[in-house]
Image 1 (spheres, one colour):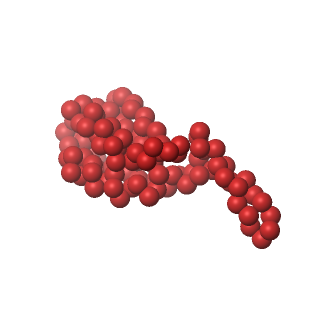
Image 2 (image 1 turned 45 degrees about the vertical axis):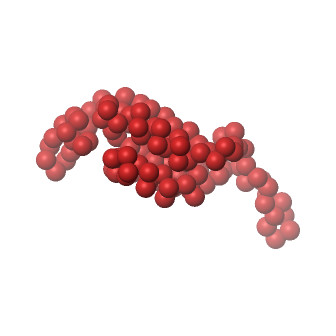
Length: 113
C-alpha cells in the first residue's frame, strides 16, 4: 500500500480526476493549498502598489492505493497534469503502513479497495 500525494495546478484538477476515474482510481482527498517552489511567484499591482506574491494557489491530491495501482496512478497524474511549464507540480510516494475502514473495521488492502 502506498500513499500518493500530488501537488498540481488548480485548472488541471478536473482533467486529473476524470483520467484517474478512467484508470480505476476514484477515491481521493482534494485540498486547496498555497505554496512556492521553483515557480517562485509573481508581482501584482493593487491600488498602485506592487506586491510580490510568492505563495501560489495549488491543489493537493492525497490517494491511498494498493501496490498494483501505484504506477498507473503516478503515470495518469503525470500525463494529465503536464503543461511543460514551471509549476506543473510534484508527486510524492510514501509507504502506507496501515489503513483501516472505520465503518467495517477492515484493514489493509481491503480497506483501500
